[in-house]
Length: 407
Ligand code: ATP
Ligand code: MG
Image (cartoon, rainbow, N blue to C red; front, side):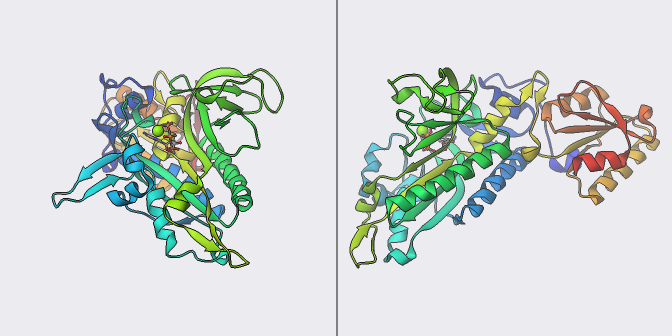
């Protein structure tokens, strides 16, 4: 894609009104735009990253037997009154229609999926089932100062699984846990599996935390075994449950959270099924959240240097950033041909063909952080100067080599 086609607008300086590294970099590099505190537009460049994160997540949810669907964001107040969370959910955005009815803007979807399934589950034969969606969520967060890490409107994948016994739910929990580990590995995030209470492995429910100084949570963690405990709930000893080594204390951001759902929701919405003996029982359920836009902020927070972003290949908006550094027709035509050949070969290339200075183009490539930079100039002759983002030196290679490395 050409620079102009994707309509990128980078800024000379990071915005003054942002404190967090992820928001400063993502705004400066033209990935997102701030509308208000905790509310951002995903610009074309940013949407490409978000979609990659969401597609990786989608792929692993499908592999784990999840079925995708989409619930509404606008929830009738009655659903939330049924569970009592109309009053007790602190961050619930409430809105009143001009015609008198009240609604919540969905922060999570238990209140919608339970009554939905009441119509389709009646026997153990219909269980287990596992539904997920990737959707915009709304939460009235008190503090929204961490860019994409804590928004009032954000993106989340939420999966809900339903089972005829707690044993079956626990079996599925393990499948999901492994799917999460795989997703974060592909995303380039080193996660700590944080048990919510006490760090005992028998207790299901855990957060996936990424260690970063900008994180809002404090965790005690074992850097070797990648497990830990959230400080908020913990008062026991600070030894690793696996290797018994000392736990370190650090700041972390929660990128995912998986836990069994309380029987409360099945009771409130009367979600029951008939077991093999014909006995009526409450459905057991698990909930699996993953903040896809928070993941984008977390990656930006971790993968950067003084010049800008450094995207992992799996989520980079493009795989190579091609720039031509001369305004004469000869160089331009070499670059045009190289660009077309890359496109034909199926390379995901961003081509900066603007009439601006070399300095400006280089600064923008570093700021945007695509994994490879490919330069065509007076000096490169019939070759291309290729450099990995973040590497010190470049090498002169043939076009075929660029294609091979970036396809
Ligand atoms: P936190 O403790 O950080 O507020 P939470 O426990 O409220 O998170 P969940 O309700 O479990 O989060 O939501 C699932 C996932 O959605 C979280 O793990 C996180 O990745 C993401 N998430 C939650 N709140 C926000 C937010 N305000 N902005 C962006 N992502 C969020
Ligand atoms: Mg929260």
